[in-house]
Every structure is written in structure tokens, then in C-alpha cells.
Image (spheres, rainbow, N blue to C red):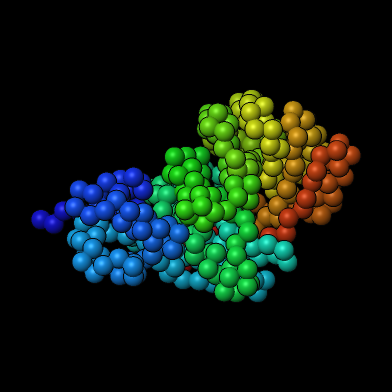
Length: 346
């Protein structure tokens, strides 16, 4: 029976160097191969043109490169691109390129499906199949960077972990991927251009703060009233707002980074004055910014975008309390690439 080969990208640079020494080769060969794997994103050992044929064959005998494949790419009328990404085990996740006049942002996935149960999100209707490995997260970013250069004539400028899955439920792999993305030996991107968005897992928010991460944090909040939040995000009964708030206070005391709250206003759910007042109160303990996000229906009709008067009320009251607020129009709705719509219809 053939042994299952290990993905070579699971090895650190030192382990690769060690492997070559054990094969009777020079350690620097490990550096060469490492560069091909990460900086040059080689899809196969054949691509490694400055490595001898013999060495490439030896690598092929011992390892695989489980590279992602963009199975299907859809382009929206507004320039947004959605990739259906096939993984080595034939599971599929989605990632999105969002262009504006000044930047291109990659929205990447961290899990196949999702561990959480937010009722308004299409991804939550898929059960969580597995976590993504660091290289699978990295590959999504490389694919979008290539598309950004091809279709928008500029490299990728920003990354948001707002695709499928809850990043903090795949903490170690997400951090390893970000290390590679920000390393000069990888893509060399600044961590300040990366936002990790969470539905709010207090223990992991504290851990991020203690690990002194350099990227930014966004919290998918949607209500600052426990009963309301639990009705739309049932896991809130396990991680109530008081715990979330305490973890965010810890985050701010450690990082001094302001917190972004992602917030959708729905008709009949959180569109009253009391909802805004609760949000203002919740925002007061640390510098923060609120992104009011346009809702993208996921077909079942239970959630409807609130009317513009409710949005105006939010904006006016937040601004009157000196809280920065932005209304974000959704992109890529015509290809189901907007917030909350990623569900592998393909």
C-alpha cells in the first residue's frame, strides 16, 4: 500500500534544510525550495527550474504540493471577482476580490463551512467540514493578488478574513497563514493591511491580544442587546456581550488598536432607537468605528434590510456621540459574492 505523502509546505524552512542534509545534499537547497514554495508560489516540483531534475524527482517521490485550484471565477458588473476554490480533497471554499478606486481587497475563507450558527448568513447553513491549512489560506491570497494585477493593474492592497468560517475557531492556522503573508519570505504585506473579523469568541480575542498580533480586529456585532443578539446569533448565549466586552477591553489595553464593529440593520429586528442607544453605550469603553453594512438576502425572507430612515437614525446618533460610522454598500451582489452570501451555490 502506498504511503500517503506529506505536503511539503507543512515543513518549516529549517526542517527543509535538515531534510536535504539527510539526503546528502547541501542545506541551502532547502532555502531554494522554500523560496519556490512561498515567494514564487510554485504549483509543482517541475516549476523549480534552478533545482536539478534529479532533486525534483526526489522531492516528488517524498512529498506533494496540495495547491488549491480556482475551479470557477465569476466577475460582477461592479468589478468584484468571486473564486470557487477547490481544495486537494475536493471540498470547495469561496474567496472574493473587492476593488475600489484606490485599493483591492481580498476577502478570504478560513474554514470549509462554519462552526457558528448566525441565522442571517448563508455560510452558517453549511456545516463545518474542516479548518483550512495555512497554505490553503495563503493560496487564496496569491490567487486574488494575481487577479488584481491582471484585471486592475495593481497588486493586492488589503486582506479581510471575512469569507467562510470563523477565523478564531481556526486560530493557529490563521496566524501561521498571516505570518507567511506578512513575511519577506512570503508576500511581504504589512499586517496593518489585514483585518481579522470575528463573530466574537472572547477567550480567543484575549489570546490574540496576549500574542501581540499586529493585524486589525473587526467584530461582527449586529446588536448590543443580549436577547436580540442571541435571537440572530444563537452562540451569543454561550459568549454573552458582557464577556465579549471584557475581552475587547483587554484587546484595546494590550494593542491600543481601535475596534471595528460590523453591523447590519434589519427591519423589525434592530431598527429602533433603543438598539442605537445600546450600540452607543457598547462603543464607549474603547475607541471604535462602526461599519453599517447593507444586508444581502439569502433567500428565506426572514431578514430584510431596514429602510433608509433607520440607517439615517443610526448614523446621526452615532455621529452625535463622536463615534466614527461608515455606511458600506455591498459589492458583488449579482454573483452572490457579498457579505453573508458565500455558500458554494456552484
